Length: 235
Image (cartoon, rainbow, N blue to C red; front, side, top):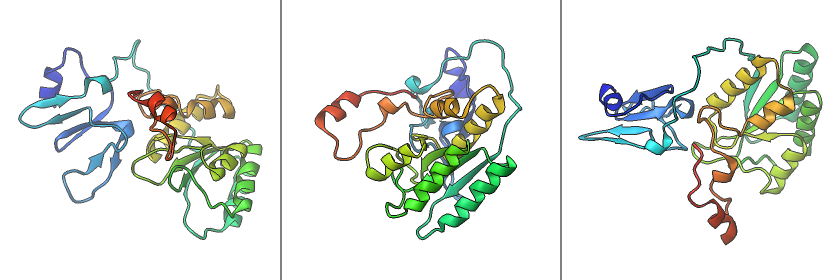
Protein backbone atom coordinates (compact mmCIF):
# COMPACT_ATOMS: atom_id res chain seq x y z
CA UNK A 1 0.00 0.00 0.00
CA UNK A 2 2.75 2.45 0.88
CA UNK A 3 4.35 1.84 -2.52
CA UNK A 4 1.10 2.67 -4.29
CA UNK A 5 0.73 5.94 -2.42
CA UNK A 6 4.41 6.79 -2.87
CA UNK A 7 4.14 6.24 -6.62
CA UNK A 8 1.39 8.85 -6.95
CA UNK A 9 1.72 12.60 -7.19
CA UNK A 10 -1.43 13.00 -5.09
CA UNK A 11 -3.01 10.63 -2.53
CA UNK A 12 -5.91 8.32 -3.31
CA UNK A 13 -8.73 10.27 -1.69
CA UNK A 14 -11.35 7.58 -1.28
CA UNK A 15 -12.12 4.53 0.83
CA UNK A 16 -10.48 1.46 -0.69
CA UNK A 17 -9.82 -2.20 0.06
CA UNK A 18 -6.38 -3.69 -0.54
CA UNK A 19 -6.46 -7.48 -0.48
CA UNK A 20 -3.96 -9.90 -1.99
CA UNK A 21 -2.74 -7.99 -5.07
CA UNK A 22 -5.64 -5.61 -5.74
CA UNK A 23 -6.66 -2.15 -4.64
CA UNK A 24 -10.40 -1.79 -5.23
CA UNK A 25 -12.99 0.89 -4.60
CA UNK A 26 -14.80 0.06 -1.37
CA UNK A 27 -18.26 1.13 -2.55
CA UNK A 28 -17.89 -1.25 -5.51
CA UNK A 29 -16.55 -4.19 -3.53
CA UNK A 30 -18.17 -7.49 -2.64
CA UNK A 31 -16.94 -10.48 -0.66
CA UNK A 32 -16.82 -13.30 -3.20
CA UNK A 33 -14.76 -16.04 -1.57
CA UNK A 34 -14.59 -17.20 2.04
CA UNK A 35 -11.46 -19.31 1.80
CA UNK A 36 -9.08 -17.91 -0.81
CA UNK A 37 -6.88 -14.83 -1.10
CA UNK A 38 -9.01 -13.39 -3.91
CA UNK A 39 -11.69 -12.77 -1.32
CA UNK A 40 -12.91 -9.38 -2.57
CA UNK A 41 -13.84 -8.27 -6.05
CA UNK A 42 -15.29 -5.20 -7.75
CA UNK A 43 -17.32 -6.99 -10.39
CA UNK A 44 -18.34 -4.05 -12.55
CA UNK A 45 -15.16 -1.96 -12.67
CA UNK A 46 -11.48 -2.96 -12.78
CA UNK A 47 -9.26 -2.59 -9.69
CA UNK A 48 -7.84 0.87 -9.05
CA UNK A 49 -4.40 -0.77 -9.00
CA UNK A 50 -2.76 -4.19 -8.99
CA UNK A 51 0.60 -5.14 -7.53
CA UNK A 52 3.23 -7.56 -8.74
CA UNK A 53 6.76 -6.95 -9.88
CA UNK A 54 5.43 -3.52 -10.82
CA UNK A 55 2.44 -1.47 -9.67
CA UNK A 56 -0.18 -1.03 -12.38
CA UNK A 57 -2.65 1.80 -11.81
CA UNK A 58 -5.86 2.57 -13.64
CA UNK A 59 -5.46 6.33 -13.36
CA UNK A 60 -8.73 7.08 -15.16
CA UNK A 61 -10.67 5.33 -12.38
CA UNK A 62 -9.18 7.21 -9.42
CA UNK A 63 -11.39 10.02 -8.17
CA UNK A 64 -9.97 13.52 -7.70
CA UNK A 65 -9.51 14.78 -4.13
CA UNK A 66 -12.68 16.12 -2.55
CA UNK A 67 -13.01 19.86 -2.05
CA UNK A 68 -13.60 21.25 1.42
CA UNK A 69 -13.24 19.69 4.84
CA UNK A 70 -14.24 16.12 5.64
CA UNK A 71 -17.81 15.81 6.89
CA UNK A 72 -19.01 12.59 8.50
CA UNK A 73 -22.74 11.99 8.10
CA UNK A 74 -24.06 9.93 10.99
CA UNK A 75 -27.80 10.43 10.43
CA UNK A 76 -28.54 7.25 8.48
CA UNK A 77 -32.18 6.27 8.01
CA UNK A 78 -32.10 2.47 7.85
CA UNK A 79 -35.83 1.88 7.49
CA UNK A 80 -35.31 -0.24 4.40
CA UNK A 81 -35.73 -3.87 3.43
CA UNK A 82 -33.77 -5.88 0.84
CA UNK A 83 -35.64 -8.78 -0.73
CA UNK A 84 -34.18 -11.44 -3.03
CA UNK A 85 -36.74 -12.98 -5.37
CA UNK A 86 -36.87 -16.76 -5.66
CA UNK A 87 -39.05 -18.93 -7.91
CA UNK A 88 -42.50 -19.52 -6.48
CA UNK A 89 -42.49 -16.75 -3.87
CA UNK A 90 -45.79 -15.71 -2.29
CA UNK A 91 -46.99 -12.19 -3.20
CA UNK A 92 -49.22 -11.96 -0.13
CA UNK A 93 -46.27 -11.99 2.26
CA UNK A 94 -44.79 -8.98 0.48
CA UNK A 95 -48.15 -7.21 0.40
CA UNK A 96 -48.63 -7.62 4.16
CA UNK A 97 -45.06 -6.47 4.82
CA UNK A 98 -45.57 -3.33 2.73
CA UNK A 99 -48.91 -2.46 4.32
CA UNK A 100 -47.64 -3.05 7.85
CA UNK A 101 -44.45 -1.10 7.21
CA UNK A 102 -46.30 1.84 5.67
CA UNK A 103 -48.86 2.01 8.49
CA UNK A 104 -46.22 1.89 11.22
CA UNK A 105 -43.70 4.09 9.41
CA UNK A 106 -41.05 1.39 9.79
CA UNK A 107 -40.51 0.91 6.04
CA UNK A 108 -39.42 3.73 3.74
CA UNK A 109 -37.53 1.83 1.04
CA UNK A 110 -37.68 -1.62 -0.55
CA UNK A 111 -34.73 -3.01 -2.53
CA UNK A 112 -35.60 -5.89 -4.86
CA UNK A 113 -32.95 -8.28 -6.15
CA UNK A 114 -34.46 -9.26 -9.47
CA UNK A 115 -33.44 -11.74 -12.14
CA UNK A 116 -30.92 -10.85 -14.87
CA UNK A 117 -31.22 -7.28 -16.11
CA UNK A 118 -34.10 -6.50 -13.77
CA UNK A 119 -36.79 -9.01 -14.66
CA UNK A 120 -39.58 -10.42 -12.50
CA UNK A 121 -42.09 -13.19 -13.19
CA UNK A 122 -44.21 -11.95 -16.10
CA UNK A 123 -47.27 -13.93 -15.03
CA UNK A 124 -47.40 -12.41 -11.54
CA UNK A 125 -49.57 -9.35 -12.09
CA UNK A 126 -50.33 -9.25 -8.37
CA UNK A 127 -46.62 -8.70 -7.74
CA UNK A 128 -46.53 -5.61 -9.98
CA UNK A 129 -49.73 -4.32 -8.37
CA UNK A 130 -48.15 -4.86 -4.97
CA UNK A 131 -45.19 -2.69 -5.94
CA UNK A 132 -47.54 -0.01 -7.28
CA UNK A 133 -49.28 0.02 -3.89
CA UNK A 134 -45.89 0.44 -2.21
CA UNK A 135 -44.89 3.45 -4.32
CA UNK A 136 -48.34 5.01 -3.85
CA UNK A 137 -47.85 4.67 -0.09
CA UNK A 138 -44.62 6.66 -0.34
CA UNK A 139 -42.19 3.73 -0.22
CA UNK A 140 -39.17 3.95 -2.51
CA UNK A 141 -38.84 0.72 -4.53
CA UNK A 142 -35.43 0.08 -6.12
CA UNK A 143 -34.58 -2.68 -8.58
CA UNK A 144 -31.19 -4.41 -8.46
CA UNK A 145 -29.84 -7.56 -10.09
CA UNK A 146 -28.97 -10.87 -8.48
CA UNK A 147 -26.13 -11.30 -10.97
CA UNK A 148 -22.56 -10.76 -9.80
CA UNK A 149 -21.73 -8.84 -12.98
CA UNK A 150 -23.93 -6.70 -15.16
CA UNK A 151 -26.60 -4.08 -14.66
CA UNK A 152 -30.30 -3.51 -14.36
CA UNK A 153 -31.72 -2.36 -17.72
CA UNK A 154 -35.31 -1.42 -17.10
CA UNK A 155 -37.40 -0.43 -20.08
CA UNK A 156 -35.88 -2.92 -22.52
CA UNK A 157 -38.26 -5.79 -21.73
CA UNK A 158 -42.00 -5.96 -21.08
CA UNK A 159 -41.56 -6.84 -17.41
CA UNK A 160 -39.09 -4.01 -16.89
CA UNK A 161 -41.50 -1.54 -18.48
CA UNK A 162 -44.25 -2.75 -16.16
CA UNK A 163 -41.96 -2.17 -13.19
CA UNK A 164 -41.23 1.36 -14.40
CA UNK A 165 -44.95 2.08 -14.71
CA UNK A 166 -45.37 0.88 -11.12
CA UNK A 167 -42.83 3.48 -9.99
CA UNK A 168 -39.84 1.18 -9.48
CA UNK A 169 -36.45 2.88 -10.05
CA UNK A 170 -33.24 1.31 -11.32
CA UNK A 171 -29.95 1.03 -9.43
CA UNK A 172 -27.91 0.25 -12.59
CA UNK A 173 -24.84 -1.79 -11.57
CA UNK A 174 -24.54 -0.91 -7.88
CA UNK A 175 -23.90 -3.65 -5.35
CA UNK A 176 -26.61 -4.40 -2.82
CA UNK A 177 -24.39 -3.01 -0.05
CA UNK A 178 -23.87 0.27 -1.93
CA UNK A 179 -27.58 0.58 -2.68
CA UNK A 180 -28.55 0.11 0.97
CA UNK A 181 -25.93 2.55 2.25
CA UNK A 182 -26.80 5.17 -0.38
CA UNK A 183 -30.52 4.99 0.39
CA UNK A 184 -29.86 5.21 4.14
CA UNK A 185 -27.69 8.30 3.62
CA UNK A 186 -30.10 10.07 1.25
CA UNK A 187 -33.12 9.36 3.45
CA UNK A 188 -31.17 10.41 6.53
CA UNK A 189 -30.44 13.85 5.09
CA UNK A 190 -34.06 14.82 5.66
CA UNK A 191 -34.18 17.35 2.82
CA UNK A 192 -35.01 15.05 -0.12
CA UNK A 193 -38.34 13.69 -1.33
CA UNK A 194 -38.88 10.08 -2.42
CA UNK A 195 -38.79 11.11 -6.08
CA UNK A 196 -35.59 13.10 -5.60
CA UNK A 197 -33.92 10.12 -3.93
CA UNK A 198 -35.09 7.92 -6.79
CA UNK A 199 -33.56 10.31 -9.33
CA UNK A 200 -30.23 10.21 -7.45
CA UNK A 201 -29.96 6.41 -7.43
CA UNK A 202 -28.25 6.33 -10.82
CA UNK A 203 -26.15 9.45 -10.18
CA UNK A 204 -22.59 8.70 -9.11
CA UNK A 205 -21.75 10.41 -5.83
CA UNK A 206 -18.57 8.51 -4.88
CA UNK A 207 -18.00 6.31 -7.92
CA UNK A 208 -20.52 3.73 -6.69
CA UNK A 209 -22.52 3.44 -9.92
CA UNK A 210 -21.97 3.58 -13.67
CA UNK A 211 -23.88 6.32 -15.48
CA UNK A 212 -26.75 4.99 -17.60
CA UNK A 213 -25.20 6.35 -20.81
CA UNK A 214 -22.01 4.39 -20.16
CA UNK A 215 -23.61 1.01 -19.50
CA UNK A 216 -23.15 -1.70 -22.14
CA UNK A 217 -25.98 -1.75 -24.69
CA UNK A 218 -28.78 -4.25 -24.07
CA UNK A 219 -28.78 -7.65 -25.79
CA UNK A 220 -29.88 -7.60 -29.45
CA UNK A 221 -29.27 -3.85 -29.59
CA UNK A 222 -28.86 -1.96 -32.83
CA UNK A 223 -25.54 -0.93 -34.35
CA UNK A 224 -26.32 2.68 -33.47
CA UNK A 225 -26.95 1.79 -29.81
CA UNK A 226 -23.65 -0.07 -29.59
CA UNK A 227 -21.65 2.65 -31.37
CA UNK A 228 -23.16 5.51 -29.34
CA UNK A 229 -21.96 3.94 -26.07
CA UNK A 230 -18.55 2.79 -27.23
CA UNK A 231 -15.73 4.19 -25.11
CA UNK A 232 -17.93 5.92 -22.55
CA UNK A 233 -16.84 5.55 -18.94
CA UNK A 234 -18.29 7.37 -15.93
CA UNK A 235 -16.69 5.69 -12.93
